[in-house]
Length: 123
Image 1 (cartoon, rainbow, N blue to C red):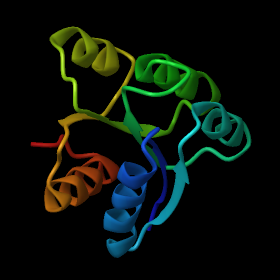
Image 2 (cartoon, rainbow, N blue to C red; image 1 turned 60 degrees about the horizontal axis):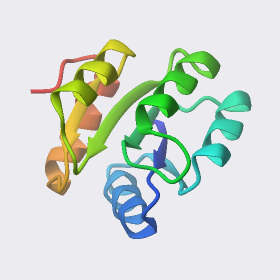
Image 3 (cartoon, rainbow, N blue to C red; image 1 turned 90 degrees about the vertical axis):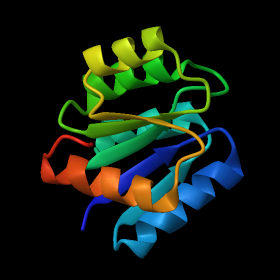
């Protein structure tokens, strides 16, 4: 299965995503600090990142741009509880594979990640 990183400044949210994806057989790394995640990506690019848009130090779109620089082949699924058309457009323009709105159903999250990893467009 895939190596997936979860970046969310809310530990409980990151833990929930990790549990859902581990149940699907993935290796999941959990980050609540975007700087730690980016430092890790410079040396160990994951297959996929599940990225929250609202973080502590940086905007999620900024983190996405940094992911593209240090790990261009990594696929990204953006999660947000504060969806805007502008944020969605920026995320897609920077190469996000999917844009999902919180709260997301566990099954929907697992299906979206599976489709993105398979190269299929999420529905």
